[in-house]
Length: 226
Image 1 (cartoon, rainbow, N blue to C red):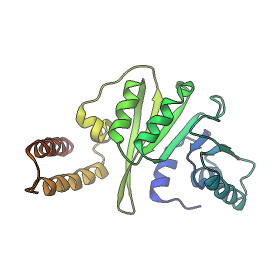
Image 2 (cartoon, one colour):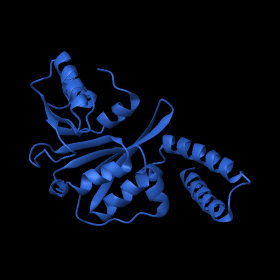
Image 3 (cartoon, rainbow, N blue to C red):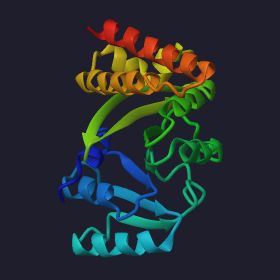
């Protein structure tokens, strides 16, 4: 199975020998890929809707991995035991939903568990939630898939609150520190976007000031990465 660039970036975060729970698995592409490439031997493909799970079942049977992937109809992590998986993927959804799933999954706040998260929206709010709840963001990466930028992060529970600057919440401390070229590309695109918005003469002064402040942050991060 060949994955999209977005799904491949997520799959690349999975460590060999892990037991994976893919939350919101949709068609189970990531678990199938991980099994077929002998990266893992067991996975749980979880989804809240029966339709995607049935499609996942068809794909699992097509690739002959029925013995390695367990389907689970589950709202988030509700139908998964803390002793069943050590790597939990939550991807392909908005940041608010990822936060909601994590808020209802405190039994998984355990140092043995690794979370691989890829919020499609409000990435800064996901980072803020994680840091306040005792998680550490160990690694992040970005990719472009069909013209859109996606962020993927590896997270673990430590029990200690970590503090980021506002720019680190917005754009990722790890990405900035490691001068990730794709973040640099994203920031240049964001800079042009904000310049164009600010040039709109119909903006009120409060909104203009907010946009100028964000543009200043973007330019500071760009300078830091150069």
